[in-house]
Length: 398
Figure (cartoon, rainbow, N blue to C red):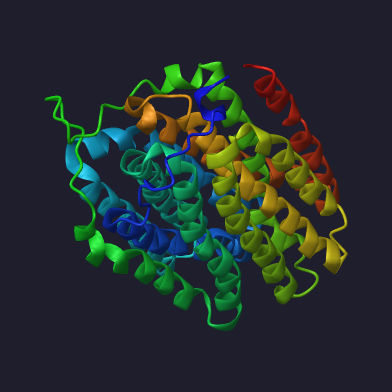
């Protein structure tokens, strides 16, 4: 039985706090960065498609962003080691915010892809540094719940800004949208002083976080690779829905497209928080099968893209499973390593997250260029169902 599967219970009178100054500050910074991210997550593909990029160009915008995210994630622990979390997170927010203004100068596909790549770099820094900081500053017996609450904080932008971005693009124009994305990312920089000046010192001081590294070695360890593969399969579908769901229902109404994304974004943070409380008490493995069932059912429901009910229910089911997956897989991986490996686990988990989204967006774009959206969603559901294989392998490993 792994460390994660033995619930850790602190005495009732000694409950370590979660909402520390550093934790709340990190939540505010992440909220601004993710709000900027989600404002353009589904609207940048629309902008590219309407400016001559077509469906393939739409897929490339998400792919470029996720590729840059993946490239920055492995080096982020070293950035935090050299410059500290304050400078590292400041760089993340600037990279998310300022490039949002580039499409104002030119709507050509190369400029749009450059903006997406720079923003992806900022996203990669933000998600790895944020997760590692939580793991290093929150007591292990409350870690899953802390990750769940943090998931709510970064899930609120998904809940509000995915549909808000679509609404702004249709009613206020892309120019206003791009400026808004820049402002919400840069504004939280005023709160940087609330973060601890943590560094990965080499002198062995007690106050410094440990060294991070060995990402490839971590990825080759079966106990870490299995949850990462599960999560990557689920985020593959996330990339498909975030990029192509507005296009798939474009023949209906903009309100239906926004409603479908809202349903997904509403379910995700709620189940992420609940699953965190569950995992702290009973372990994370019990959550693996429900996450596969819900995500697969949600993707399969979208085969009926012409049904307004299916277009709302499907993303809602998928979002519920996705929220469980975020907490369960990350808590499972963190519970299988020592504190010195939190940074590499954070990087590995986030790479699985973003690689899945990028591959899903580009791959689905290729599929729908020769098939219907309904057929593409059917294929996606079939691939997602195969996630039960690493789940089965993990559950039989004790």
